[in-house]
Length: 397
Image (cartoon, rainbow, N blue to C red; front, top):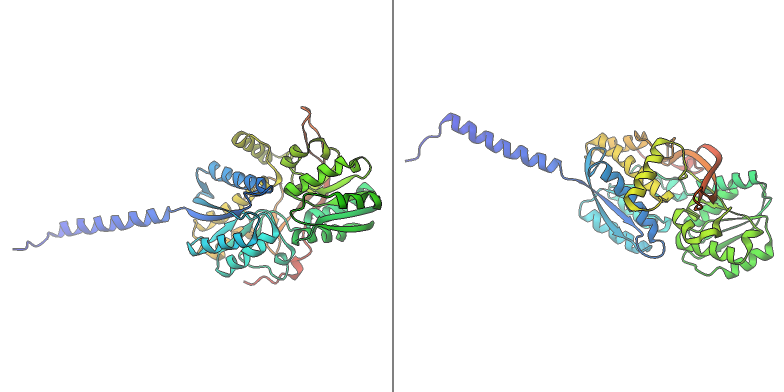
């Protein structure tokens, strides 16, 4: 005979079921937001991805595994500096349900990743490259840049060359999107004579032909953009040829970052760089970051590390505004467009094309009190810089 369950027993059973459901919901809500981090971690340029990954992880560690109070999980992929590898990684992560991406550090690789990401409805927040095409006509509501538009350091380079009195300059850069953006950006603000534009290969290691040509052209200065291992080789060979004694070198800071200075030694001494940040910035958040990075990893952070740390905290602002629910796309976008975080570089805001409005500076590489070389802030070059492509961005709602 089946006994009739008492009313109190039924209520208790129902409460138990509801409690289980609530617990399952809470557990689900606590699942970390996965962030696809595709970066160059191998090849001679691998140290760039290493610095970006480490700085991003530092922000997560300081938040006890969270960004903006939301638990996150970094899913890391090495693109090997190959666009096809990066696209395959992005497609694989998208199929697994990842809705938020960052990490790529070269413009040609970024070009292979962003279209797939934004087409799927996911978000991409760039921590380094900001190619001109994505800043203008190909801008997208789900694509943000936390670093700079590619031309920025180079337009500052043109301003610096004017102020330093260089009347005849030769320009050198690799023949890819960021390299072409570099030369166009410099020419936009430079008022002197561009004696020649020399395009190199992205993975070039021997610059003997270019150096011989520079010697014959005899400019008053050069402006060169070569990141990573390519830049190390260029500066070493430039000094070995004795050209650093007769032709001053001006370059963006990512052509002579902290790791590159260590690798090139005195070859970079006296060179000028342009950028958005320097290790000797006199603000509390930057000082705290440099100290924390050194303690965590035993080395000085590069500009790439600074940008990655800022990117992590920008993403954190978006996650905080949405409680980590990326389906709240409008709220996430709004939080990134009006970022509520303290940038290591000081002033930071977003332009209408979702690229930064920020100040640009001139640095000079010289010796510290302990005899080591590092960039030292000289002066501000440009206030509230906005890129030239925002006018062509018709941002869909």
